[in-house]
Image 1: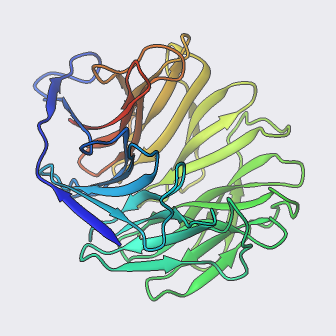
Image 2 (image 1 turned 45 degrees about the vertical axis):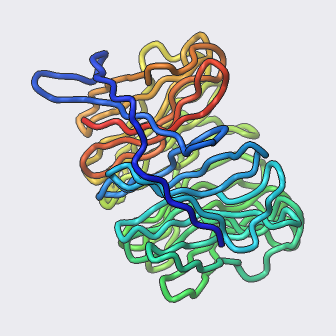
Length: 358
């Protein structure tokens, strides 16, 4: 295991007034980089303002990092992580205790999940029955405050299943009832709340995608966003869930739009004004119902947005973000205080982390 700490960086503090400032509300964006990184990607922020993410070194190897609210960055590699280009350690989620979960590829390009405690203890997560093949195995995606982790894995037939790893290390496999049983079909666990409810999506036998929620009791509820396409590679993709059981994500049907699905089953679709063919992609929701994500402009560049629980949408772009195809601002997470993290890509395609404080 390799862990290295950096002192607080010199930040670029940007007062942002286009769409997000209102009345006496103060809004600022702070950008940051892991020193020497070719790219820095913020993935998740907890209530204390701690950010987890990953970065790419000069050899194009991936490593994890944790950034405190004060700006101190600690980098790390999972034990056994590959040191070759395109492989390494990816951190996706951090809970209130500062435990980080994610995925790493070993030297054989086989993937494993991990949980890293704030004290530096690694736990490796491998779902039972996984296939040992390059590019496959176990992918951990989300951790709750109790330390339970969800994600997905491929079995020996290359079918994908969801998994839930309890705080004591017990791993349970699950499938949506109508998930396909063919290669590259199956169930993907994406988000877990503090009650142990999992949200995600699955591909059916026709490669149409649908959302689901897995209750702590084991009951699976499947759903489709209204208007979601019913053809191959179309459908509903759940990306996050909050403590109230409200799920956000996007759906496709010739275009991409966002949706919000409450625990009571009420579904609201939305698309950001000015979005082009790339559409709107929510990525996270906090306990108050505020949603963040990104949308594609007609130029094919991306901008970020924050949507309040009442449906009021504000858009933003980090200063220095690229304005041409597939560049721009990509929010990934929002905490209870409405602080957003993610990354942006500049005109040269280099990724940098950011924090937006409202």
